Image 1 (cartoon, rainbow, N blue to C red):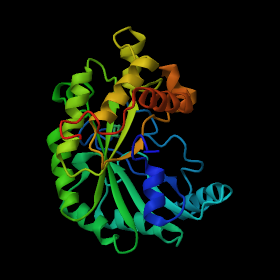
Image 2: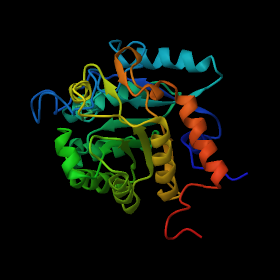
Image 3: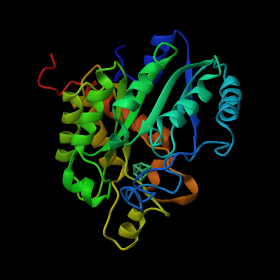
Length: 305
Ligand code: SF4
């Protein structure tokens, strides 16, 4: 049976010949949109942990975070791991600091890949050179928070960067052979499905190698909570989210690796929508919708056979 989409687990299994798990790392970085360099409040949808809500010991030294993560995944029989620098902007520090933190993670010989999440405007030539210098040791990819290609929405969300920063970052990394994964948010305030498709079209047109899609959710500690609580923002329903994701998958380049189709919101501070608490339900509904309609990744592209 043909797979419905090219998911990350299969991609990693093909690449390494066995199951590989991510270990999420909090390296203690900040974000220029929080420390005052660009802004103070952060993007309106950002929670207080900057995305790293499921790291068991975020204050421990990096090798210890890796050790604990490896023990947990090892119980499921996994022997090789991706060190995933997740919280805040993981290229936002002087080069020697970045180099030391990445090296800390790579001390463990079981780490076979380094994944670094960051803002597009925190990638420059020096950072890209540093990341490329680890390529002989392990597979390296960078996750860039694009979220939307709509300048209007990016401004409204106080993101402080645009799709032009994203394009520049992708090209800076791609010319050094580093893979990039674009984060895309569906259901941002005032954003239509046509704008989501426009965001995906930008990704399709660039040398991006993977995408992560998730629903916009409202955390108690975020700026978006004010809009939501005052009735100025209505999150998507489960069915509208699923329909949007299925259509995006159908328009995605078939070679793009699908890293994620749902988010992992912090349960204690999640205000809405409720369906994002149940990842399995969302994934099953996406699969069922595609199966029932005979859809696969890329099938609605103009160049599709
Ligand atoms: S760029 Fe990322 S970490 Fe920084 S405020 Fe926005 S969502 Fe949060």
